[in-house]
Length: 284
Image 1 (cartoon, rainbow, N blue to C red):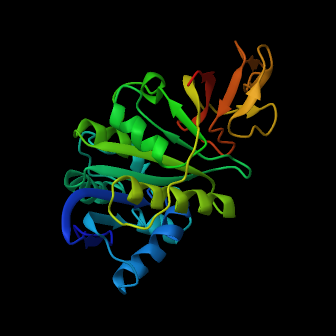
Image 2: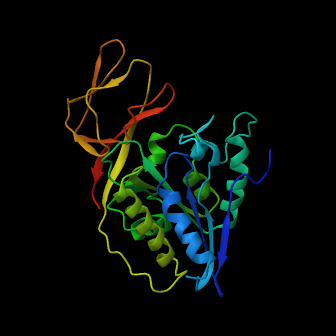
């Protein structure tokens, strides 16, 4: 296979400055990234816009075959391979090396994703232990920032964000909302421009003021055959202590152990997938 399966675009300003890397379609069916990054590439390529300083690297479609087939992934979840022990099987293993090399060039990464269910609100992840991560997340103009992913993910995290942070850079994952929702495209576009503004790469970008709320992960639940949600949960939907969340194949209903919110429910989950996460609100 070719070592360069992913199309990458590079733009440099006249002066030195930070390097911002932006990813779209790490999961092929998550289209918000390509929909906002490709028009930006066109404007920078034809001279309609230009950077004042620094460098912008854009990989608008990180999982090309999955994107062409409108699938999350072909063989392996690409967002679980960054920095992971090398493996030879699967289409996505041929992509990750090229993307890791791009991360090695950047100072900041904005990885644009979207979610599975209509009506899902947007959010970003952030690492509260790193001040630069929190500053970058708050600058993106997203209404909700979710913390403590590392506390619910077992073992080492091989996502783009975690890998970027391990490399001493700043990585943020943006979940812009439901895949094809126009609001999700708007969230992704705003975050894209606010990242450029935050790093001072281009003048004339107005700042979007935001006062995000903070949620934190407390539990991760994996799907098992026979599991069924008690209702069609919406991402960040409140759930009360004692309320049924899902029913196992043996008929047992799993209930919330405290008041909180359902995070990233995945009704189409298969065995081994993340089914949902549980979270609670955190004071700012």
